[in-house]
Image 1: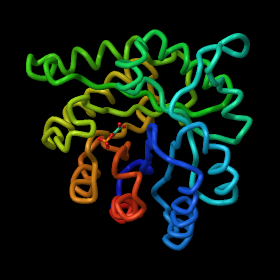
Image 2 (image 1 turned 120 degrees about the horizontal axis):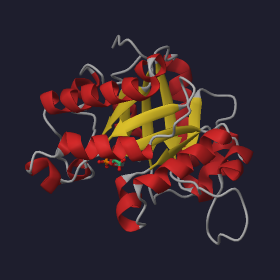
Image 3 (image 1 turned 45 degrees about the horizontal axis):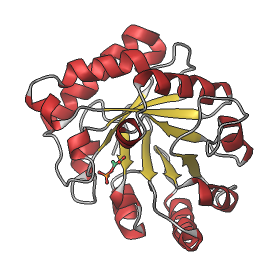
Length: 252
Ligand code: PEP
């Protein structure tokens, strides 16, 4: 698949995965090495408990390992939190921020997401910021307004051209098997591109925008071919080697 930007296929393992799943990482690394992906970056974001093992395992490979969250604080008395410096210390390269599950279950506002993003970027971690509307917001025609507001409040002011990625993840599509139609995905991605250019100028044009929400081996090829879609954030289908590999098979 030839696109104007290098694709990023990112797996979000959420609260799944044990040390024994290192086998999948070894298989994935072998597959990536054999396929010699030129136009695709590949990332797995496991839970913190196995991130160090995975990052050590994948050190000299083209598989990137990332995290699913980080603190907006530098260090100190914040029980249970993990700082960007700690993620960098185990050689993680990216962090997903503002996932709808964090926004919903941990009351993360866009303002908090922005502080986390600033903190992560300071520590040279690349950041994937998630935005997306709920089903009722979609039904009442508020999708672009909601996403515009999330972008306005969540995006850090200073970036370099390749350290920020945006993921469009309609909340109603996550884990549901439902996906927006191609036209709707196109419209939202085009809108996000416009907002990024308004905020960052030429740099904004180079920011990748991923689609996320029920991406699987059956729909990935079609979704990835939509204009302004520069990759996918994959939840459930990233947990099984065969399913994730089938998605990667659409890339090169
Ligand atoms: C996600 O939660 O980031 C996600 C895209 O999940 P799923 O692919 O399972 O819908």
